[in-house]
Image 1: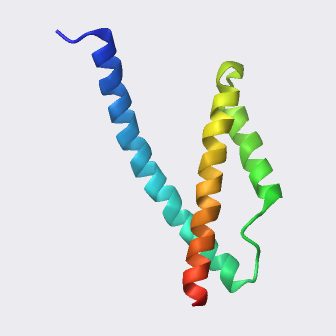
Image 2: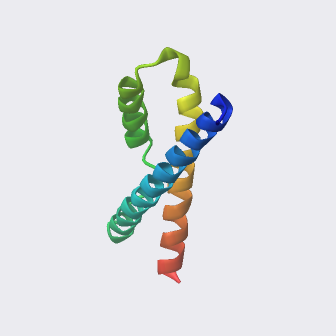
Length: 94
């Protein structure tokens, strides 16, 4: 019989698999954004868009208890997305 800890870890492992799949999908969309920005001479950083996404997602989250942890998590996602865009643009400009 599995302990509650084992069951929780199994659940986390399944969620992590889903998150990886979603991350890959998100980064493919980010690739399209980078291509558009490069073709249209736009900066990678769009602070207004970031603020809009963060506020919209916090509203969807609707959890005061989790908000600061979500912000920490999502800021990492945004940084990874911007870094990926920069790398893609750098490669294409070579």
